[in-house]
Length: 356
Image 1 (cartoon, rainbow, N blue to C red):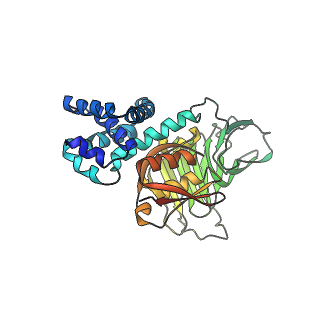
Image 2 (image 1 turned 30 degrees about the vertical axis):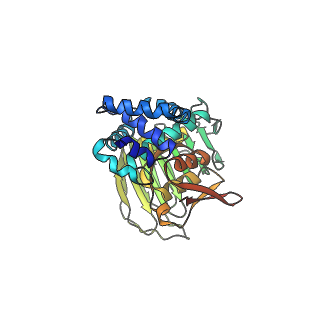
Image 3 (image 1 turned 120 degrees about the vertical axis):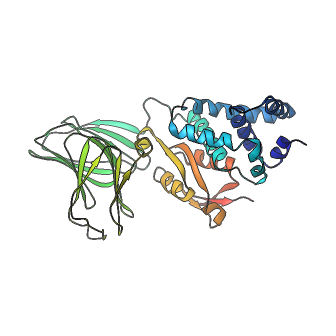
């Protein structure tokens, strides 16, 4: 029995196919490796079919090779297929790099089959509005996105379960983010500042683009995509206590302001592509706790995922790219890579449990 036979004993069929997909793409793949792969593939028609499924997903990964996230995950995965790393395959699930790349392969294969790459997604409906001195309210349902063109040339992109109130006046353009998340692409007008209020935070811009997220349980997050904005504090909401700061904070492009309830305000670097990926109907997870990934996926679907109490489930980490509102795709990817199973525990609730 060679090293590869030992590997195959410890992996599921899909895991083994993912292993070979990564191993064969590695620069240090040897002729002996390829012979071992050919022998495995010829053993059973099921092996050929599993590898073909993996390759279909990998074709989409190949189209993203310029993405730093993809490069990082691919290199980590390849490192884990080298002979010096074989011992880890005796465990019941794969380590981070292989699992992450396989999750992306599974996720992209499913996204292709479910129409993620449509030019005009059905849940992204454009609306053209409003008179220069009017008041309007706009909202999206769970799983829906909406693009709103304002009369001054600004654009609002509303994420799932979001509500905004728009009030344009002679000297100011006022937007209130009542709930949810939105990207604001602001037309320049030096005489009328563009002001967004979210919770007790006020964001002031002249011409810029930024993302604001308001969560009643967490607080406010602001990500500056381009330009400059100033963030200050307005009246506190009555139902929450927020640790105040005294001076406005100016952000530069690529920075994120985090103002969570009962915590100091912080500013940090943000990955703009990941933070704003929702506008394209996808979510990018980079080595985050499964609980956090589940919470984010749940924002986009009335069907909610819940984690079982088993610490092995609670401690899992996730990397991958997934379509919003497709809980079934997310679950299928997890079940392919990890020993997890989704059990229905309510009309609109599925619980992820350890299956061994």
